[in-house]
Length: 455
Ligand SMILES: *Cc1c(COP(=O)(O)O)cnc(C)c1O
Image (cartoon, rainbow, N blue to C red; front, side, top):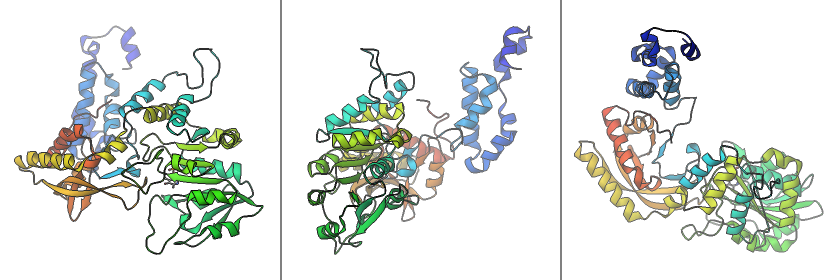
C-alpha cells in the first residue's frame, strides 16, 4: 500500500502500524537484488545492511517501503553510493581512493554551500559578485606573488585553457624529459595537442639544456611549458632547466607544478611550489587542488593578472567552471586548519610506532596474529616521487586484506611480502579504535559496523 493511501483511507490496526509493513529479513535475502550481492559480500554484510535499514524503519526514520532500497544503497560497493573507506595503504594521495580526504572544515563548508549560497552574490549590496571570490581571495592571500587567480575543474583543464589562450595554432615548447602521462592513459602532450597547438619537443629524455629551448624559439612560439614529473624520477646522467633560466628567454613560461603546494614544504624539498615558481619568473602556474594541497578536485591557475583575466574570459572557460561545492571546499581547505593530507605527511614516526604497537598488542591479546612492523609510506601519484616517509604498520596474514576491504567500514591496506600491512601514516589516530574493530570483525567474519555512518 502506498503511504499516501495510508493517510486517507480507513484501515485495520495491522495496517495502521507502519512497522508491520517492514519487509522481513528472509524475504529480502530471497530478493534477487540481495541474492546477487551475497557471493561477493557474504551473508553477514548483507544481513547487517538489511538489519540497519529495518532498525531505521522501526525508529520511524525510514518509510517501510524504502527499507529494501536503503539496505541496497548501504551495501559496500553498491552502485547507488560511494563507500567511505579507511585508507591504511600508506599512500597519502591515493588516486583510486579519491586523492585527498577533505578536512572537517571543508566538509562542513560543502554542506553549507549545498543549499542556496552567496557564491556569486554580494549580500551587502544585493548585486552580482565575482563567482567564488572567497576561494580566490584565500589563494591570493596565501600566494601574494600571484597577480591573478582562477580556478577550473582540474589541473588538466588549467593546462587546456593555457594552450587555448596562449598557443592557438602555435607552438608549445617542452622538454622531452617532461612529456608526462598522468595516469589511466591520459598524457599531457596529447591533451595539449588536442587544442590544435603544436608541441615543440626539445632536448632528450634525460638531459635538456637552455640552448635547446633557445634554438626552438621563434615567431610561432606560444609559450614554454615546464611540467613537474610528479609520478616518476629520472636519475643518473640528467639535467633540466629551471623556471628562473627559462624566464630569461622571453616567451611566457607556464609551470605545471602538479602537486598544488602553494609554498615550499620543509619535508618535500624537491617538490616545486607555486610561490617559488612565480618568484622565479613563471607567467602562470597550474596545479591540482586534490593532491598535496589537500582539497577538492580543482585546477589552480595563478600568475600575471592580465594573463589570468584572458584565461577567465576565454569562451571555453565556462565549460571548465567549478561548482559552488568545489569553491566552498577549496576556500575552507586553504583558510582552514591543516588538512588530512598535510597531517599525514607531518605525522611523527615515534607516534606511529607507538600506535602500531598498541593496536597490535590489543589484537594479539584477542588471539589475532597481529604484529607492529616498520613501514615506508609515500605521497603517491600526487607528487614527491621517490620520497619515502618512515612509518609504522600493523602486519596481519594476507588473507585479512580481502576481508578488510569488503568489511564495514572497508579498510584498504597494502600487501607486502605475503602480509597485509595497515600503514598508520594515512590513518588518523582518532580512527585507531575503528580500525581495531574492523580487524576483529574481519577475523570473526562479521561486519564491524551495522550501518554506514551518515555524517
Ligand atoms: C596530477 C598532475 C596533472 C593532472 O592534474 P589533474 O588535477 O588530475 O587534472 C597534471 N600535471 C601534473 C604535473 C600532475 O602531477
